[in-house]
Image (cartoon, rainbow, N blue to C red; front, side, top):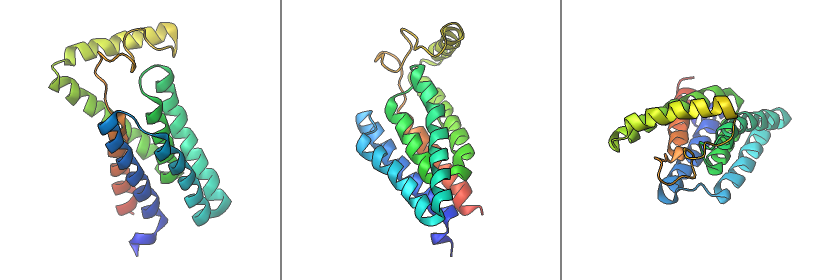
Length: 180
């Protein structure tokens, strides 16, 4: 019975949280703490209840890996704190076996969405120039946010990255939940 196998339950639950986060990100351009905090705790408890201490520790490791990777982008001014907390929650729930898929697929979804968004707004050339400027800035200045090209500048194109997290999570759910 596939419905109650943990390989199905973990990515399914993670996808539900990611989709709720995406909806709130689209609607308010924020991902609330009242979603991410309980979701992190739920992921830890879910893994602990099914796999014991080992499950708790691997869930914690998954959340930390996802969170730290996204924290780097937050520190560089490339995304909001809600995105970091959402990927941490989704990682805790999805579990360690899903982390590589989750991060890679979320990154691909974010890149594709960014290109489509820039094309729709007629700003692809400017966006490519911004990417080059950001790479140069971070090479010289490290993780400090660029003074003009950052998530706080309302004149820049800003992507609701919760949608990319939901897309990455949904594809991970398909691959991990249905392909085993």
